[in-house]
Image 1 (cartoon, rainbow, N blue to C red):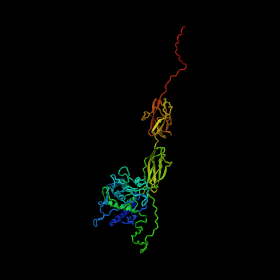
Image 2 (cartoon, rainbow, N blue to C red):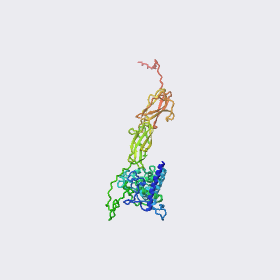
Image 3 (cartoon, rainbow, N blue to C red):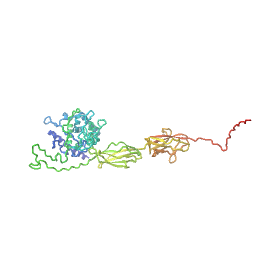
Image 4 (cartoon, rainbow, N blue to C red):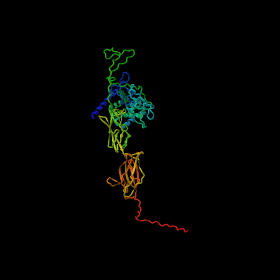
Amino acid sequence: MAAHIRRRLRKGATTTAVAAAAVAALAASQAPAATLADGSAGSGDPKAAGEDTASETDGAATGNSPYYTDLPPLVTPDKPGSSSNLPAAGRAEAGIPASILAAYKQAERTVATTDPSCRLPWQLLAAIGKVESGQARGGRVDANGTTTSPILGPALNGQGFALIKDTDGGAYDGDSVHDRAVGPMQFIPSTWATWGQDANGDGRKDPNNIYDAALAAGRYLCANDRDLALAADLDQAVLSYNRSTEYLRTVRSWFSYYQRGTHEIPDGTGTLPTSPSTPTPNPSPGTGSGPSATPKPSPSKPGGKPSPDPSKPGGGGSTSPKPKPPTPKPTPPAETFGSLENAGTGPLRATAGQAFDERVTVLARNAVGAPLAKVPVTFTVTGDTGTLFDGGKKTVTVRTGADGTATAPRLQAGEKAGEFTVTAVAGTGRPRTLTYAATVTARQADAIARTDEKDLVAAPGEKFADAVTVKATYKDAAAAGVAVTATMVKDRLGVIDNDKGPYFKDADGEPVRTLTGLTTDADGQLRLPEIFADDNEGTFLLRLTTEGGASIVVELTVKAPEETTPEEPGETTAPEPTETPAATKP
């Protein structure tokens, strides 16, 4: 580990020395360090930043869109022999509009709290903001930090720029055909969708708001555990923003300039860049500027003679260089898998036997923090609830899409209530694992009622002739498989259990006054076991309660049958005599 740290420090020191040498050369010459054939500033040795990434277009926050190529002014000593490292605070170019400067410093404070090991300097955000948008076009923002008009880059249609087809339906950039870089920090919509922040607390993630954009840029630069106090990490962070070594050199120059001093100026009064936002594309290896490049012949001046062919001693060569065989374009290396993150999966909870509404979704990123496609992600269900993915599988593998996300199939809850987990694993050399807790709740009912209205009556010591039958429902539909508890109670609230009166029998034929483990059938109905009466007469209460809290109280009446006096055999009751009226004499 110590050797690894020493190697990293040596690499950072080397990179810093190269950058410092470039700045020193600029200060000494009062002119750009190198010039390409078209007159634009050269990028020097591409390897000064680690590796030449000019041919890569994906994975960059800006989509490698154009940027301003102005370099900071050189500081000339007042007197011979005095230091050239004079404060820049008094110069117009060092002034940063108030809202823009406040946003950069706020982003530095926020990241220092959430990711202190990154050591993000606000001057790096200022350098990128200067190169990308001229500090939001000189600080033309409203009181909330939102630009007064959208800042949009050109359509990334492959005509001199990267080809990035529309990813946001034109929501951010107004272009439904191709993407454009958006806002003060020039995020392309697909990158903003992943890294966008709400730093000003207005409930929106707006790439045209300097506070939101500055914090998003800070978090993006800190990706992959970078320590921006190390030169190598800082270089890689800047290259992840725009994969051009010329871009790195330009940002580095402004970063050093702002480190020497800045001052706040009113919004809208900042110095706008003078050079067009059309940098020279980084050349492919073997064809661009740098020590190993072959220079192109300079064009002849009108009326002049062509330059001699440098390959022939004595001059007198042809007027145009000999064509060189085309250099095979190297196959870009496969992107490196960097991290696996939760992509907004909500709580995983479902009733037994039902499908989960929420699905597990993960996001894969590459080594620079951008979404990574075609990564196999294996999802596995672990637990004894009987829950499975659609199709009856406990393990499935899904590849990430163009946006870097992979969504597992829908989960189908088992019949057993309880907890289980879903794990998502991606990567081979150093696998990344996410674990999601999930819950299966028991089937529930929100209502229960008797299926008939018969009076339930029994004589002391006898069995109730009619059975108790009920039906449970949930949202007016039959609630199948719902657990029901039956208890003999003393009051309708069911607070006090009764130890006398009607009872059930257990498996051994012994009296019990509470039954558990009862379950409704497929139609939501339940027929209770036989109920017996003891010798106590009166009206008793049976309370039925379902999973989910539905309940009903049923009355049970125990009374002796009414007595009747039987007639003795042979006894007859003579009818009382009736009076016969006397005969009428004639």
